[in-house]
Image 1 (cartoon, rainbow, N blue to C red):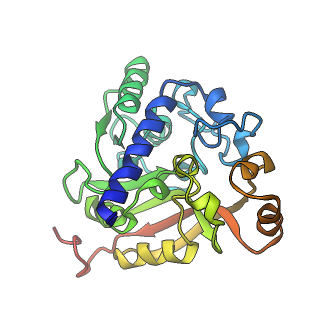
Image 2 (tube, rainbow, N blue to C red; image 1 turned 45 degrees about the horizontal axis):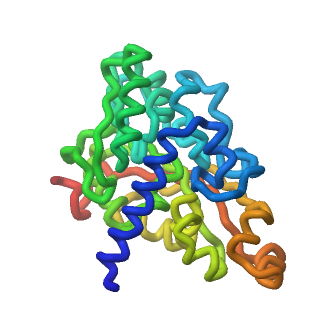
Length: 282
């Protein structure tokens, strides 16, 4: 199987899983490993996600409990900005961003899953927002013109994208010169056990699609971004009931007592005001 076929298979897995997730409420998603429909029914959603409820613009109907950070809190969004949210789901981060851009700004959410787009549009209509829109599309090939966004945000989504280099190249392309991004994502330190890496359920559940932290940061630098800052970092501890589905007792002991780790990081980067990188002047 070539890399293109593998990439398309992974995209199909993600689309199918998140179509099901779109029809569930936050409590159901919270009890199912970052949304994956597996049997880990006692997992606390806070293992992955951070609490949005005190943020201005928060709308409970749009919160499916799928994030792993609060990128909008760190994104330095200003009134009048154009903000793009990658993997916008039911609209949670878009509505928080809209509270910061105000009526003079614009927020565009992009999501791979039609049912998520439908749900987000319903939520936006309920709120009466005319400057928040949602577009179905692939983050590796965004349905956006270049140089239109002041800020790009994303919450626990880019780790699900097979071609992360292309995703960050596209992020660079759509940002204006001097624009910036803040994304929360799952990364690894050390290699995950093979049982976890190969599991399709864990891929759709935000873990097995993750790459090494240093590789992740290197991809961002290679895309042309500067002034990279890890704004927040926290270790993710997978409950034993999840690990038992994929690992032997010996593997669980080695994994939990070794140096390997799963982390949520929020990363900030800027597109230079002037540069010669691909996509900078297009």
